[in-house]
Length: 208
Image (cartoon, rainbow, N blue to C red; front, side, top):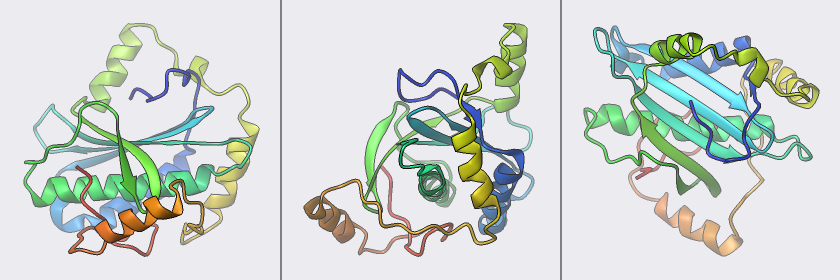
């Protein structure tokens, strides 16, 4: 998984328990679609960016459908948890659209800014296989331990607080768009939107 920002070099992975919680939510919401398919959740916290990749791998296939979402992140505001939840909702919308259309979607293969629930998010679609990618990194001698954040305490404290919340439902009052822009996106959301309700109370909108 590659970050969006050129400045994103070192990162801290989501805690294992937290990633498992996210995976569990996806499995619950998409149970009717999964069958024997495997879901893979990968999340990273960079210095100025939150990145999430949810992979959908059908049995017997090498190509993995990846729904990738990125958002800007501020260590000063310590908004990692809120941003992660935004990313989860956006990835869920992408996945729902992909599954309901049997993979016939037009998602961007490079990072594209998209308005989502009044927020500025960036998304893209990829087909890298996570297991093969990990094996390739080992062959290249890449050590993920060397890519960890030098200053992890802020991120770990924020995530540890989130792990204590069973519902994982933060407030959503931090709008990135202006009031006028937010009204425009709300009008777009007023149609027949589909998608599971993950960490927010609003239905999802088409993301392409």
